[in-house]
Length: 437
Image 1 (cartoon, rainbow, N blue to C red):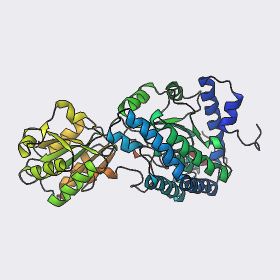
Image 2: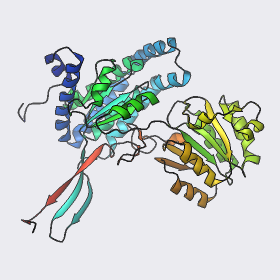
Image 3: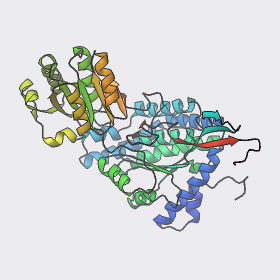
Image 4: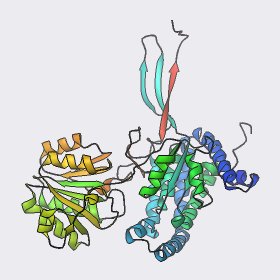
């Protein structure tokens, strides 16, 4: 292949390759690697054109996407899937429009590639710049939520990264319908179709091949799904992983919390959407606030359809609550269930979060500025909020256009992973003939 020959599309590689799954997957990896090299050199206008065309294709194909999703949901319902997980799977016209709008928002973001992160000059006259560059090929393995295909594909494209998508069997039809519209956007801009590839099988063996890196084709893996998927990825991956294992999210109602603010924040944090990773799973109420706030908060949650599992004080506050087990404090329910306990003070609340949390998202409700600042400083979570719903743990709400996931590790990517976090960097050094003594 010479410099003027466009890289083959993924399906072209697959057609030339033998029919075994391993060969098809490695062909997919080679195509993505070639596409990543081409994409890294694409100008911002071309990437933006591809994304805007993809958004238009999503809107034009809304009825077909929703129809495909209805078949996925029918199968999921027949399997006895919980309402919370069904909600994650569901697409309707409104959610397809939200997908398209997110792709447009990503298109409108400043191009992250080539931005100078830092520049300095050494005493010897060397001029050094740290410059953002694409990661390369990002493997995204996800379950249930087909909108991940659009978010991940669009974010990676903006960051100059090729993407290999592997959706779950429960969202297979929906994901294929969304992917087809993303490919329309690539074609409209003249970019390689393998820029956003879809693994053409639900065979779980394909996941293992991605985790092994496809002979060096994949540079980073992002899992989006349940605990078992993420645990497997973190245990088996031979490439870096951006992920969170669980979203054990806390809301702490401080002694100086405003009652109306506490009610709004707690209810929205838990019940807006119970199946998202930013949904609150534990409510902590300060002992000084408990006499005026515990019973109203617990009753409000139960009246809203949320099961409350609590300590002795919680059971006394509302007889409809049930006793919490030790395991409840470390459980991501992803359903209309919340654990509740009274804690002695701010120090005890922070200690509980540290002992039981997952470093994802935690919030404090308080009018005490010193308490808020201490919570922000001492709670070591990727996202820490004051007087705001934990459901703001979302890249779109952060102004990133979307997110490829929430990362809780210690890489440069932490919290919502957007276009900037999907870049790495290199150093550019300019001299005038300097040599090292």
